[in-house]
Each structure stands twice: as structure tokens, then as C-alpha cells.
Length: 77
Length: 425
Image 1 (cartoon, rainbow over the protein chains, first blue to last red):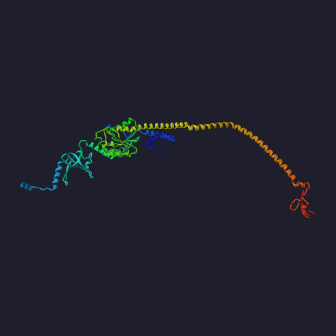
Image 2: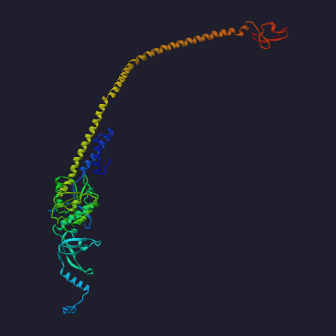
Image 3: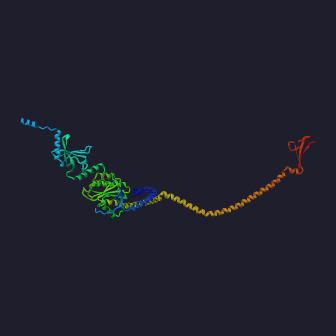
């Protein structure tokens, strides 16, 4: 199954765990949900891992357009 | 007395009203130019024109005052009835009504500073308008992908933020929108930043950051236009202005107020750490839940299996199963011998049958042989063979009595080799 973004996936996972914990499901459905839960969890973990650290600054170029450039703090505040 | 009156009459110069009012106007407007007047505001009105009319009074006197739109737009606060103020302006006479008024160019409250008052007033107004409504606050994304920071690139705020992110070793993308954070035009630049970041698809959190300073230093964040820009932002905005004790209008409108820029960095970077923990906990809960679910089913199965009905049914079933087993084994034991016996039986039967058939056939054959001999013995032809003849009349009736025929009657006589006709004489 495809999840739009982390937020949705996470919310779905919370819902699944909630349902599982209620314990009112038919065994087959419980197992199906569990399986989906495992998949979502993997998806979320991937999302958590895939971010990188980048610090950029928007600067106006000669044409007056804003462009992103790597930022190196130097001011002393 | 008379003379005096006369003299007065003689010397009197008659002015027109306009002349007098004009003279007064010139006098007053020359003498009372750019003065400071302290008094209490009353009868405050703002017609559609946007000019502000009010009365300045103290215990013994009062005077009319006006603050034209071009000037009142510059006021840091909004005048109100009962407010003690110092007004700077010039006296002006309004000839059509022969009244003078103070044309106010600047106004400041007595007591609390103008800025403080302006702050309180703007806060009250925006609050009444619902800009601080908790229900309108946007939630920060669970996992921010890129954070737009509107701040001065050379200020302390951005350094504080980056330091925290470095320390926490967080993998957050930061995009800085450089903006002045104090002085004239600072508010406009911060507003531009919010608007620009809102047009981008990649930024999902905005931080407005500025280090500590006086109320005047932080004034850019008390701007009404900025308040509205924050309110209108579709991306959640965190305000991180000044120190913990400093509050700005931006703090109230923002979706989240961080006490300091560092605190803002802690908030956004803490998210990932928190999520990793939460995700682990969800994994564990889900595994635990499914374990419990399975355990529960197993127990229910066990209970069910131990129940009377099931035991009864089972014992009955077991009885049948045993019986079946027994039958089966007996069957397997009997079957081969049964099979053998049958085969023997079969061949014996076969023999018997064969013999019976043969006997039957023989008998029949014999019967047929004797039968045909007898048959032959009874045939009239065999009588004729022995020399007898058969006499019949024309009706083919056998003639056994001579009286059966009269003289001259014709008869048929049959001998061995054939028939012939004869006549009685």
C-alpha cells in the first residue's frame, strides 16, 4: 500500500495499533492489520532516516530573483 | 460720561466678523505654533474621513483638537476617551464657526510609554478579532522536511538555532530568508519572507527569529501587518523573538511561541527524536497486541475444547473412530481370506454349473431324439407305408362306415405313394 506522507502513514499506524489493542477483531483481520502496520512502520522509519542536513540562504541575484545558496554563518550577532 | 460715550462712539472702528476672526486666527496661529499640551481626551470621534476629532480638557478648561488622517496614521497607539496625553501641534482657528482647535501632529500617552500602550491596544484589538484564537492555530508537521527561518543572517538568532541543531545532530533542512529584524522597514521584510516561503512547496515550517532587545528593538514584531501575515500563512509559524520574558504581537498570533530562537530549534529538532521513540513504541504495542490476540484465541480454543459439549461430542466421535478403526483392521484382516474363499467357491460353482448345463443339454438332446421317433411312429404316413389306405369323402371326412357312402358316390383314397379317386358300386 502507498502512503501519501509521513503524517498520514503515522496516523494510520496509530489507528491500526489502537484497533489491535482493542482486541475485538477477527483473527484474520487482526493479522492483516498487523502486517500492514509492519509495512507502515518500515515506511516511517525510512522517512525518518532519509532527511539530510542542509543549511541554505535565499539571496537575490543580479536579475533580482531569489536563489538558494549554501549558508555559512559568520556574523557575530 | 456722556462725553466718554460720545467719544467712544466717535472713535469706534467697526470690524467685520470675518476681520476679527481673521485677526484672531493670525494672532493665535502665530503665537501657538508647535506647542505641547497635556490633557485628557474626551468626545473622541473618527468619521469616515479618517480624521480624529476630540476634546482635550483639564479640570478648568477644554479645547477642541483634531488629528488629521495623514498624521494619525503615524501614531503608535490609538487615542481613547479618558486617556491622559501630551499632544504636540499648533492652534488653528476655523473661521466658519469662529472656533479654535489644536491641530495635533503627534500624540503620546502620559505614564506608560507610547509603545507599550500601542502594544496593549493592538493586542486587545487583534485578540477581539480572533487572530489569537487557539482554534485557528495550525499544527506543526510531525516531521518537518524543510524549515524556513526568517531572520537576519548575521544575527545571534540564526547562530543559536544552528548551534542547537548541530548539537542535537539533527538532519533538518534549513532555508534562511534574510530580513532585517529591527528598524524602519523591518516588518515589511519579515512579511515578505513569510509570503515568499508560503509560495514554496518545500518549506513546511516557518520560524521568525530574533535575539533579545528592548521593546523598541523588538518593535518590528508588533506590527499589525506582520500579525496579519502570520495569521494568513498556510505554513505553521513559530515565533522565536527575544528572551523568555519578551512578548510580541507575533508571539500571540504565531501557531507556536518559542521562548527563544534556541527553544524553537529544540522544538523542531525534537520532533524526529520523539517520532523515533513513538514509532518504536507503536511497533512494540502492535506486536504485543497481536501476541495477546493470538494468546487469547489459543486460550479460547482451549476452553472450548475442554467444554462439556465438545468433550461429549469428541468422546462420541472417538467411539466411532475406534469402531471404525476396529472395523477397518478387521476388514483388512478378513479381506484377503474372503477373497481367496470366494475364488475357490467361484470355480466350484463354475464346475457345477458347467456340469448342470451339460446334463441339461444332454437330456434335451435325448428328449428330442426319442420325441422325433415317437412322432414318426404316430404319423399316418408310416401307417400307409405298411400298406394301409385312408378313404375320405369330398368333404375330406374319413370314411369309417360303408353306410357313410351311397352307390355311385365318389371317394378319395390315399395310399403310400399318393391319392386317387374311386366310385362305390
